[in-house]
Amino acid sequence: VFTTPKWLIDNNILNKITKPERITTVSNIQSTVLKQLFKDQILFTLLTSKSRNPLLPAYTLIDLLSDVKDGIWSELKTKQPIDIYRRSLQKTYIAQLFSNIQEAEFSTHTMIPLFSGAAGEEALPVTTNSDVSSVLSMHLDDLQMQISKVISTTKDLATREHLKYIAATIK
Image 1 (cartoon, helix red, strand yellow):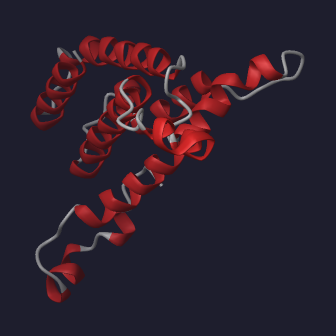
Image 2 (image 1 turned 30 degrees about the horizontal axis):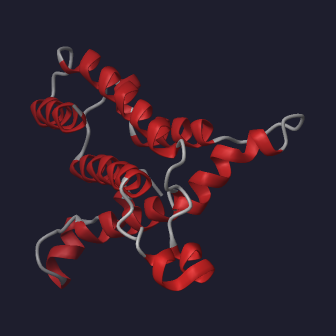
């Protein structure tokens, strides 16, 4: 899902049947998958999975973040240029994590329980006042350090400028 589907992007065909190539179709699909992966219920469940069953092996929030990052940011290790679709995906990844942090720290729904009781409390994001925001923040800090290390050795101009932008956005 997070690799560029080059087999779907044949400009010779697309330019005959649609407007010039747009990255939004691919980006929309990838964005939807990221939103599903990073839903507050999933993040909270993974965060608490080890504490609920300490004797059993558990797939944790840190495991999820590491696995998704390794897939979406693979170019940091391979040193390959990042194409326009992957740059879009990486920006979406950062935006989604910032959104999750904001939701966990500053839920805009905090007045709901006052007016709707227990049912309203269920409407609150389960990550509110949890460790999810600190885990996500540390993950972004680590990513920013990884990006900063490769910027100076990146030869492709578009990739280098993209990495500078992402590092500054995280900072």
